[in-house]
Image (cartoon, rainbow, N blue to C red; front, side, top):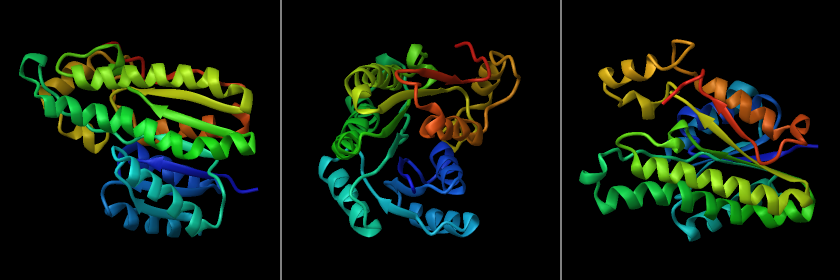
Length: 245
């Protein structure tokens, strides 16, 4: 039996690595991203893994109608009636000290992370309940505990922890597990914009002395999506190399 997984923010970084990992394991993979480059990325992964069940589609996770249209398109293209796995990975940063933070910077981050997780989860949850099986994996961050210059991002990532814990209680009886991943300082396009001085300060707080790789986070996601993780529910799993903020 083929399991189907939606990964948002799939055009780069952790989302791209997760898409590649799940495709290599034989999942049907639906890569969603606001950037249309996701379609080319999906084509590349399809060829790399020799997995014909890989597609890339445009979606704006902040927009309810976009998410609804995306999900209906997924079901139509693949000829399925539900999706088994959802990875809420789409994310952005708009860093600023709070005293300088604009309403737009606050809104953009909250909408992508929190509205995005709500909008996408609402699409898939009824099908998971009907099928009595599902995996929802939310991407939080070590910054959920608070980080200077990231009041918006930290609030959003902390919100995803609360979202995860609540849904794990509500959906567990349907054999749907809901867990959160807490990545640390991972080598992605998002962290590439961090000034070298700040990078060094962060690296000094990582006992392993290096940044994490997107593939290392993807491996954890793949485990949580599997049958082997059937009794892991409401977990907050750090993939940080021991980072202390």
